[in-house]
Length: 323
Ligand code: PBG
View 1 (spheres, rainbow, N blue to C red):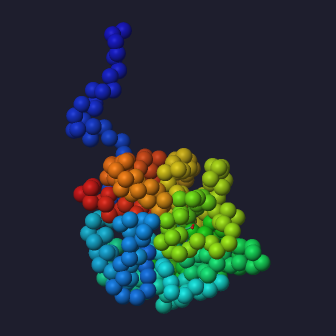
View 2: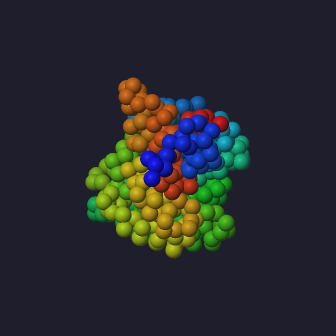
View 3: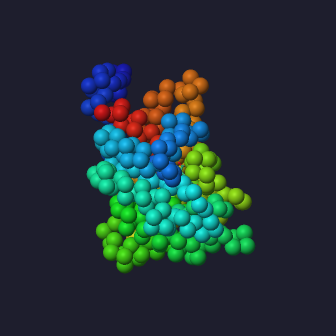
């Protein structure tokens, strides 16, 4: 047998060949862009731990939304930073709350852009936990009323999809029932199905002022060591009526994304979280990595692992490169 018969370099010789045999591709429509919304007018404050990302007041959000839509990005996900916090996160389910007004503004001005909302009370509670706290314990079922009201008011404001993110039990079923009886049976739910207790959320908590004031989130978010448990979480959310399941963070959990893809027929989303973004930004800023290439390679790896959708702070930068 002549040496070697199989030469895999044959198809790597020209860019045209490489393009023809490329197995995975990214498109702007794969991305969901997370945005932080604050009260007031004419505010566009850069988040120090997330260079290039801003806390926006609603007037700036509307401008931003048109740019995002023009880049071909399918959707945004909104995170509210309220002026007022309490132990139940009441400002989060106020029909006139920051996210509810933000949703309405985007849908009024840029109706073609899909608006997803994060349904979790942590940004609105003074203790920073995702559940109601009693005697130092984070309660599960007692928090459901707040979440139902939050999801319903988001839907009433015009949200296209809601995304429960607190990783406690029974969220999807409760929100599904609430939406159905409020007349929103057509509104999909994207479940943060396998969300790990990760240190990579640190810049987000800094951006949204949502760090827990005591303890940590390990009694509700998942142990990074557990793959089978992630699959149980995903299976439960599918049973409860989720339309899209999400894995979060993305890069340190590519195996979980691949396992999710193999297990369910639903679309799988992955969240490239704040810390993943900030690491690349910091290394690029120090001159240690090429920012664009690091961004595209990590996004591609997430897609290759099996994600159909990627929530990413790089959405705009990546979309510009893909045009
Ligand atoms: C909870 C929520 C968090 C993120 C998205 N939704 C924070 C947390 O669990 O502490 C993190 C996103 C990121 O790091 O980019 N409302």
